[in-house]
Image 1: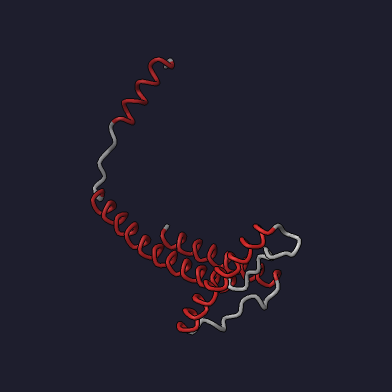
Image 2 (image 1 turned 45 degrees about the vertical axis):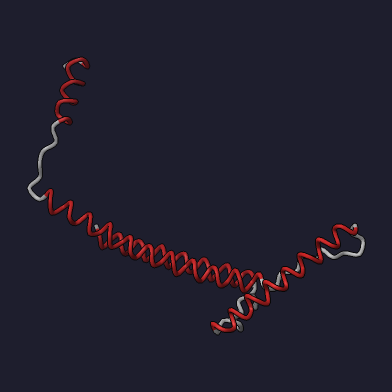
Length: 139
């Protein structure tokens, strides 16, 4: 069989896909899995975003920009003082909001960088293992 005969034959074979007996059941099963995983994914991303936001706000409350250096020009000192005032106002507002939520005494910075690295690595490994288990159950 030459290449001129083979290519059209393959195209004809793949142009007609056979109808499976359980095609509607398969489509319904796929739709169910897509909808259920999107709810779980949305919930997980929302929880992760909230936790990350609380941690970011808590850690940024101790931010010191050191913009009020005596050797800086006058305009730089004025801008630095303005930024520090704004930063202090925001820190006070966020601090009072966190204390109302009961999150004011949350300490994360007491751990060293290596401890945080290993905690994050362990969490990523646990998430990957859970994904593999979920994948093996679906297959």
